[in-house]
Length: 473
Image (cartoon, rainbow, N blue to C red; front, side, top):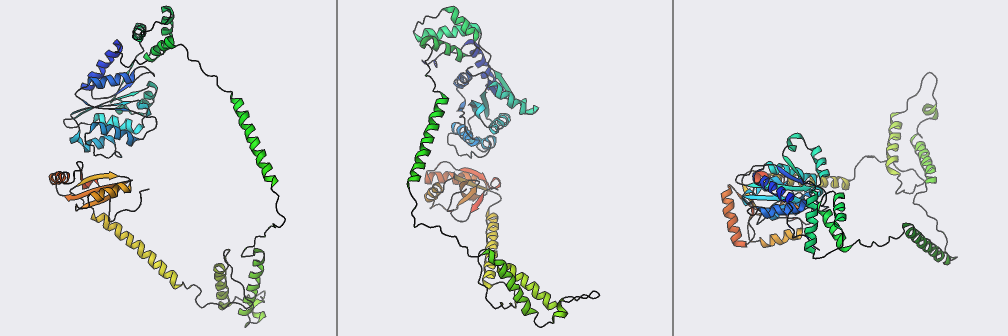
């Protein structure tokens, strides 16, 4: 049974007249609060029906949504040919398209407690913005608990710009009148004594939803609820199935015998770490004997109590050279076999191979080239004047299709802004010239009216020299 066509109650009708007066003469953000089922949505839709000369936008907020989705739903209903950017705040976006706005607008956001707080802040700012010859009124519906939380976070100057309107509970006479009015429209005669109905209505909080629920209970009776399955029983069944599956898998694995010819393979590494220490010590001894073979043992190793002999400069340089080569020669990844004879020392131990030098020079030149390209792209963007924004897309396929349609038109540019690709056309010294070019473009190609943008407001847009080959991450 549907009661959508029922008339408003006297208290609701009085509240509707108050909302209508505030919509015409008020300058504050209106927030309609009340309990669940108090009739907030009914009053909001009735207000839009009364504002016949206003361009209205009704948004029923979903549970999970972002700010861009809400802005898009509002702007699509307000603008006849929407060319807008839903990534920027709502007040800034409406200011950019103020010429396309109707003279009087009314925005209703139902279930506003599901909105992000960014939209709340934007609506408060939008209700205080003066648009020349334009009027925008905003009504939001929310439970009283959520509004109290938001009001506690607002500073005093902003709190004065918000006007809460609370829906009071229905009086006992209105509850009974609503009950029997709906009962007469149902064309049924349930056997429910009047005293019982009165007592039940007195026990309620006073919302229309409770009255409708009581009437449906009297007409249809209590719904038989199916017995819920025991949670313990479900746990036992799931545990039993898991045990059976584990037992079956164990028996299946145990049934396969391992063949006798399969033997464990020993893992051998390229470098035997247990022998590396011996190789290093033997190489060190051979190298020391070769370097010190021209020196007498007494002059190199015997130290007297009165006079200590310092090592020769050649010996220190040789030892230092060996240490530097030892660190770079022996690695854990690749070990060259050690010959019986000692390796010959290089005359240029620190010399860099020519291939490495070429790679470094090439990398440095590439980095310098990228820097020059970035600087030239920034310098090529105009500072003053106007341009036409034709389209703003996220997908590269959509961008390519748009460029194919405009391949015969000169001065088409592609810019990147955050996660979107923006197609721009031309550089104009005045807005009037841009409007004339826009009219010619619409007549020639049949596209929607472009958005006239100022180069001063496109500082964050990056012009592209070539067509991009991948999506923006």
